[in-house]
Image (tube, rainbow, N blue to C red; front, side, top):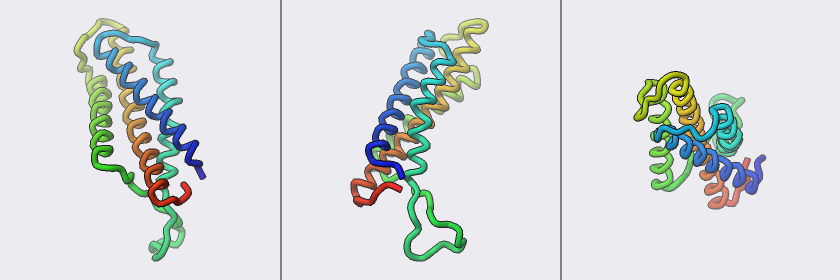
Length: 157
C-alpha cells in the first residue's frame, strides 16, 4: 500500500524528471549538450521510474461484486480518471517526447553536427524521449490515483 504522501512525492519526482528531460531535449534541439549522456539518462531514470511504478501499482482496484470468470483475478488495473484537459495535456506531452525520440532514432536533427557528437546527441535525445514519455504517463497515473483517492476517500491500494 502506498501512502498518499509518498505517492505525492513520487508524482512530484516524475514531474521533475519530465521537466529535466524536456529541458535537455530542448537544448539538444538547439545544438547544445548541457550534460553528458550517462548523467542525463541516470538522473531522468531515477526521477521518473519510481513515480511510474507507483502510478501503475496504485491504479489497481480490488474486484468487488461479481467476480471475473477467472477465480485467480483479485484486482484489475483501472485507466486514469483525470479531467479532459489533464488527459489532453498528457497526450500532447507524450506525443512530443515520442516525436523527439523517433526523430533522434531516424537521424532527423535541426543542427547536424559531425562525428561522435551527432551520435551522442541522438542517443541522448532518444533515451530522454523514452524516459520523458514514461514520466508523462507516470505523472498522469499517480495524479489520477490521488484524485480518485480524494474523491472517494478510499485508501490507496
